Length: 503
Image (cartoon, rainbow, N blue to C red; front, side, top):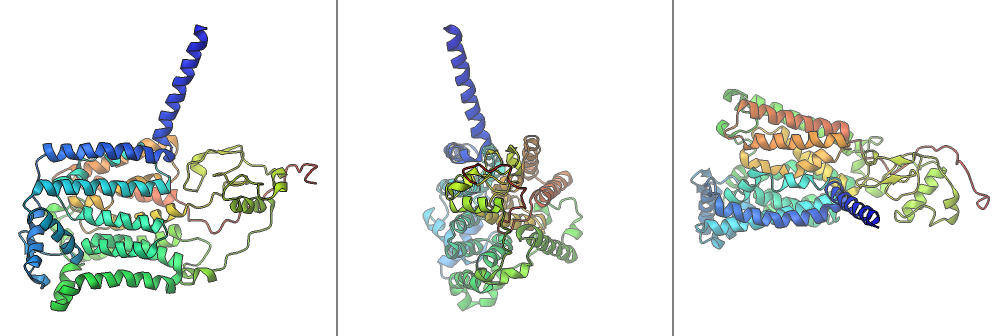
């Protein structure tokens, strides 16, 4: 009797342990883990605000710049703060003007910190929603994306930079893209650009997605939405001094100070400031975008010029009529249910295939236990031909577009870490990951965090950051196959057996 109770207790403990392990490793548990981490982050941000001293860097300058606008100054060249002239587009002015009035003309710093803590939690919720849709990153990684990053908490609630505001709006736009609300997404994307221009690093990926989704003529209205919002927001300043507004708010040639650089500390200052070096970085950026667009974002068997056509006019080769293809179509029509439900006779067709496929070999964006040759609940195939997760494709294009820009930036300042921090888990875990590969990826996240926490930056920290970025790029290039064209399953062997009933 006692032995039976002991066996039952042991089985219960094993079941609890298995569930705990699944909660850490299975992407399907992301909503649960996200809820727990958001609650924890609320407490962490309150502790940081109350216990860690606020550091004045740009908040006072922001308030002085928008105060000039509040006093009636519409000439952009006359809007200045104690750190220099205003260099952000008009959206920044309107948003921080609201914060100016909400915080007693910028004097209530503690209230501003609480507002930015709320922004931090909102940003985190938007990021988690993206990760829930892509279903790729194991939940344990999100601990490193949340509570473990000192620098990100500092950027939000101890420095009050405008970079988090732009990124939060950008993540909201990406959520709208995932919901197929492209017009609203483009509107918010443009609003994010109007807060800070770093959002333009996502623009090449967005242009590719718009062409892929709508074709050339179809994407023109979306681009007009982006342009129109910029005109409307900047209109008060454009009417007074259009050249001054454009040159100040969209100054792509602005020089950065060498003392603040995080990524190029190992270079001599004269090289860092050299225009030829800047041109070389721009060429490297364009080359990287071209390579990824041609070989990682685009279907490899089609010309990239087909993106210019209307999607309805794009022709794809008809798949061969094979048993595998019949079962594939049946599974698709059944909404991913078990093959053979749409065609009763199909359940008697047995296609030989691997008994078990590991999760790493499944190109779809799902964490699925693949048994008896079936993948993600679709019909059994001779090989794993999982439908491409559309959400994962959108996120991969946008995040990799931004990351290529980060790697080729003329300078990265400490607050720029937020430009790509929340995208790093996806960039690292969007590729197939074996059990042994998890630790090196976590280590890579840790080294990147250490590089950004080294102040002032050193030759070693800058070189280490470039090495880490290079490793991320290499695993993105070699770990991601080009997205497949509409699925054409490979020619299968003849069915192993057909029941007498089917005959």
